[in-house]
Image (cartoon, rainbow, N blue to C red; front, side):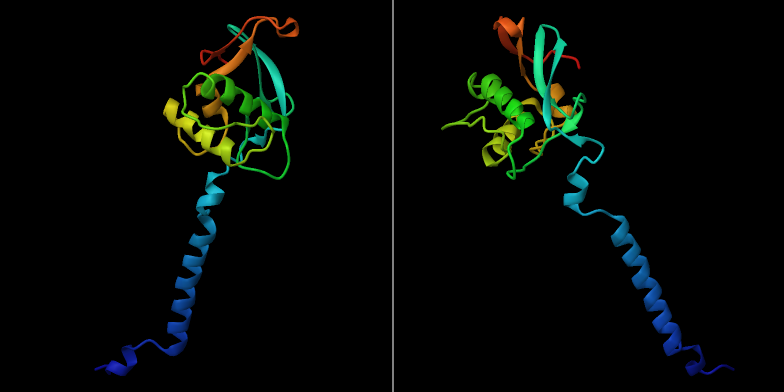
Length: 166
């Protein structure tokens, strides 16, 4: 008959088991990104310029990364960015000035993605029922009313539309 003492794990076995469990949890923790890391759409480059594209009823100047309009913008007050200025223009002209979203006070077209731009973009996203994360990407762009112009070089007719297809 075996004694009870013989069935108890040895100290080495216990330490090895605890180490294995700790490593397993450590690996899981490394494999699961944090909430802030998961929020960054790493598939897209940051918008850093604008691009003029045509879609009925006119030409749109929209945020881009080089020639690629599939790009991303988020809260960043570190430097002015022409893509942010473009986004701010669309928000001001197509949402604030038209009353589509409520806004009190001024709204600067300064190229800095700060608190006002973040708040206004979330309101735009709520207006359209897309995820109100305060980040600009393809889903937000495709839902938004964007300012268009016909014959932009001569200051032709302008308006806002969300029937564009890019």
